[in-house]
Length: 226
Image (tube, rainbow, N blue to C red; front, side, top):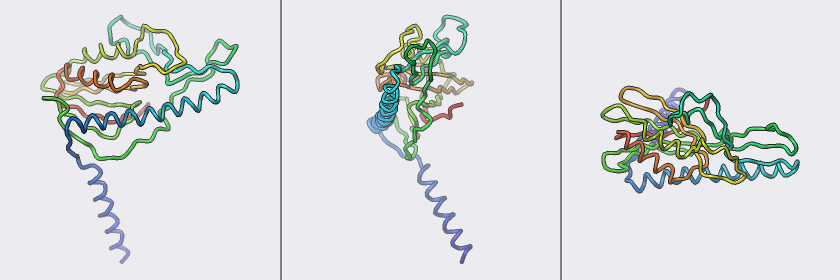
């Protein structure tokens, strides 16, 4: 009896796992709705983090800056790819009367993914997309095409949305991505992006850049932070 019960539990678990990982098909409108839902969900979380942090800073007269830009490495050249040496923190706090930073903040660690089955469809002619649960601050996009992916259009996009030539720090939320990194191979490429405070217009432009680089199939999911 005990063995039969364990077998039943195992079969149910396998069945649930299979259903959860079964690919669901949808149309372009369905794909866009999913992308916009993930963006809206993360922005609610991000704004709540900012509100909570703001309340704390008011107590000691500190100033909260959103999306502060820092150069993590020395720039080797002036190409678009040097944008990879930059990082925008979700926020940082400066204590009144102090020149140094009191604390740097990234909010992504406590964000919980929503569970749903991978969903696929044609985003545009000759450009297919699969979406798995993803975090707006940990977007991983695997790209495949007939030839090696040309990342130049994505590099131009990244420079536009990172704005590394802008040293200003903001007390209000401005549309910027926070980090970007490439992993290239012969017939595939992968880009990891913290979309930060950038909106859906930035994401749709990213998709256009990926397609312009020769990709005909992509998979959007989440990556694990170091």
